[in-house]
Length: 360
Image (cartoon, rainbow, N blue to C red; front, side):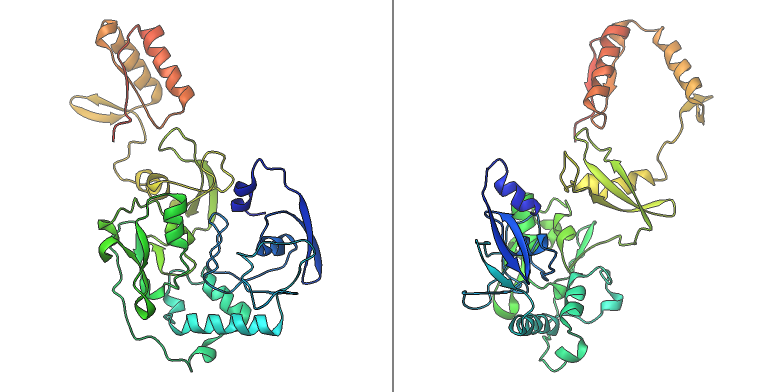
């Protein structure tokens, strides 16, 4: 089951049911959708609006299937699996429906794939290839001439609504995951778009720049401003606070070029705040970052070893009475480290002047 399904049925004792997807028998917990059952059976069904962390939506109409004794082509992401259900995902009717849907999407979509930041990572690109749609299929259709100005007001990401396919994943993530509701579906027909309140630039909206919308966009409508592709990833713990969010640092050479959350992280479960997603590379590579202890000699700070710095600090402590000493800890440290710091101040230095830096 997907993460959303697990959350829906966590703690419940559910009975299981059996169904068949493309001739493959599968047994799933009651409440599982047909799409989830198909994935458990190893059957691929294309989607564009579906996200494992979000509630089923059924907007893109690409996950349609044929179900025996059921009329029409229901969307598998919103249809609950039932006992004895027989599902067919690759019938001629299903393939015609998917191909027509992709053709209509592509007819209203820019064809600058090679120059797009999402090239080779675009879900629309992969789905179009899977259903067999190429440029020749949609060139015969009337293309949209409306061009929407690109919103590059946010320092972290760029919004190009010309590439938006109205899947709604960004809107739902902003509502269901973060609870901010900075964006919403707006207008109708050919003018339909994803908009902020008053259709203002995103920088002037309630957006907290968490990046959840960008992380879920299936096309190039939402892309990170810094979009260099990493060559390897390193798993780490975000250093910005003591929550312990797990993340993967995308590294290229000796430079961090991207940060993505770890879906298995016990404290963040695939989410990151604005600092964790966009702030790590900034301070790691900042030219003013202090990388070694500095000791002021003759009015000028000079590099020193850790032993020199610690010996100097210890010798200076002897000059002051306990009440004249203050201990400042860090909100980036763990609870255990902060406990040791206050214990050092009270038990070793004999001072109760203990403070922290968690003021933003």
